Every structure is written in structure tokens, then in C-alpha cells.
Amino acid sequence: MTNCTRKPAEEYVESYLQGTLAEVEAQKFEEHFFDCPVCLAHVEALQAAMHTLRNQPRNPPKAPIPWPIRIAAIGAIAALLFLGFLGYSARRRHPQPSVASGPVAPASQTQTSAPAKPSSPASPTPSSLADLTLPAYQAPHLRGQSGDPHFEAGMKAYSSHDCPGALKTLSQVPAADEDSLAARFYSGTCQMHDGDLAAAFQTLHSVAEAGDSPQQEAALYYLAQIALVRNDPATARHYLARTISLRGDFERRARSELINVRAGDYGK
Image 1 (cartoon, rainbow, N blue to C red):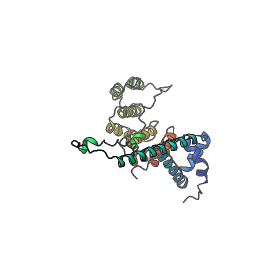
Image 2 (image 1 turned 30 degrees about the horizontal axis):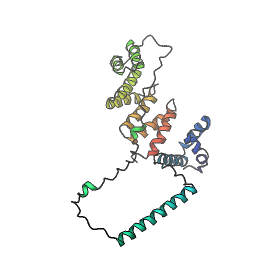
Image 3 (image 1 turned 60 degrees about the vertical axis):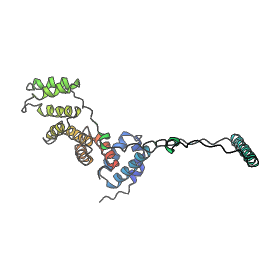
Image 4 (image 1 turned 180 degrees about the vertical axis):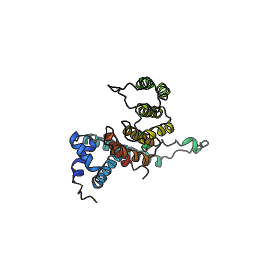
């Protein structure tokens, strides 16, 4: 059990969530609160409160009426009341003959419908947090002679955002080739981008479970994004935590997203 007194969270959490905390301090704070349930609970509670406040409709404050206008308005109201009293007294002294009234219109014709109340903003869903942008590809400066030409051609199509062309070409990279795992990863992100989530999940899962590789961390991160699109926050939290554990290029993005998923209290 941690002996933390929540002091780091009280000192840094507000500036951290507002994005004004210095990069070095933000990184140290993250390293602390992700291993400290006391501070993590404080971060999540404050972020949830900020999220609720941002989604509440705000009515602009009404400006106070200047005193001269108030006095004039009161005088006008008093004059109208006095004139109404005089008219009422005259009608009582000189009653008018009654006039036969015509047919009364149905209530449905005389009553005006009440204006529709503005609908409250829709509650955010896990899918609104998903990051489905295609990861950039940078060709290595040095390549061996055994690389399959289909991989290079497929990645040219991928870099041009031609996912159908990339999928077709990358599928021809042999399983024994040194680039086969990378070909599978970029094929999976293309399937995700094109909306074939079932195939994308299967492809990226095979990359993530293949073991240590340059694509493993990114595969775990995008498995979390697919889970978010499917509104499956429990699975998303699982893969985001695994992404963070690798301490790589996607760690900061995964940490930030995990905070948002936890703050939303989805599926708990």
C-alpha cells in the first residue's frame, strides 16, 4: 500500500490538466501518479469534474438595469394600472349590451404549441476518443538486400493514403521476409482506416502477440483505438496499459487517453 499523502497531485494536477505544466515536470508527475493510486484517483476526480463543467450549458449573466430606466419603467407601469382602473370603473357605470358570440374555435386551433425545449448535448461515448489517424511511415536509411520489393511498393501506396493499393501489394510480402511483420502492421492500420474493424483487430493482434518488434507498441495502441470505436472501454484500457508498459513513442499519447477513458467512467 502506498504511503503517499496526495501532495504531488495537489501541487501539480491543475496545471497538468490545463496543459501549462512544464514538460519535464509533467513527465515526472505522470511517472508518479500512474504508480500511485492515491494521486491517480485525485487526477481522475478533478478531470471528471472539469469534463462535467465543460459540458454544462452556460447562460450569459444578465446585465443590471440602470436606475433611471428602472424608475421610468415603474412610472409607466403605475400609469397603465391607473388607466386600467379608470376604464374598469367606467364600464361598471355604463355597462355595454351583450353581443352574441360566434362559435368558439376548438382549443386545438386557439392554443399555440409551446416551443420545443433545446435538447441537452449528447453524452460523450468512448468512440469520440478514438485516434484513427494513419501512423506515418519513414523508410529506413539502410536496408538489407533481402527485402521484398512488394513491401517498398506497398509502402509507397500507403504513404499516398492509397489503402486499397497498399493492402493489395503488402499482402504479397512473404511471411519469411524481414519486413513481413511491418507489412502486417501497416495492413492492419489500413483496414482500420477503411472501416474493416474486425479484420484490423485480427491483423494488429497478430503483430502485438508476435513478441518484441518495432511495431508491437503501435499495434497495441491501435488495438485500443479499435476498442474505443466499438465502445468497449474495458478492452481499450487493457491495451492502453500494455502500450504504456513498453515506455516507447506512444507512451504519452496512451497515458493521456487512458486518463480520459477513466475520467469518463465508461463501462465500470
